[in-house]
Image: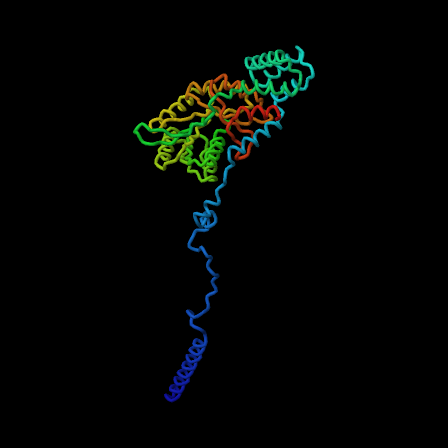
Length: 384
């Protein structure tokens, strides 16, 4: 083939290649550089550096954290409210007293019915007989026929039966520890399953906070999975620290750690919640004694409160006697002392143990726990 022909073909190919290169380069220059393209990213949130969960749950400042805490009701106003609630209940003791005062003439049959009603109100045979005898004597000697005066006599005798002279102070003031250092008051709360111990500890913490006391909670109920979490929730609501251990941990060790934490932080009171236990289980009761002994290696136990369900009646008294033998109970907390309970249990449990009822609960509200006052109690039962 002619060389000139080959040269012509090569020249055409070179021209085509150059033209294509020119087109490609021209199109590339028309597009904006990649780094200059606008970024379509959303604006960052104000707290992007903070994890979402923390940003939602944690107050931004200490001031906000303080305002988030609940303010417990003062004990004085609780007494008035609880007395009104007691007056509105129709327990056996209240009905028996009302029936007696409703009679224009009190004969022998009336007195017998009255005494029987007192016994069924869990007052017990002994106290019921004492109250009936005292009333019969006073009403006969004084010649009281006016229902209003009879009411006053009944009120006086009932207050005396409940025991106004008993020391109902919940002892929460610390003393000197074994090493000579200042230690907080220690309140050990005990009782059988289902009486409301953990709830009572939480409510008692609220009472103390309302009085301006600093509190540490010890979650020594390590057998019930939800107990420590429940107690922590109570503490968080009023800004109280809770010391807890792993599930199944040694209760005595947790109690000891809680008291040590209270001592180191300068707290006024440490409230120790213990596991519910059947009073018939010797091993569990012995363990409760161990908890108290271990605590006393670091600080004296200033109060042992036994929580009793007021609706259990005579069974509650059996429980009370057994606990008192193990841990030297110093006070009673009666829960559920409302319309379903029999108010006479207050007198009988005090007679059985020789220790006073110090706190009562009349409802499910967070502030439905109050110091027990004999006069307020009697006035509530009488509907005054």
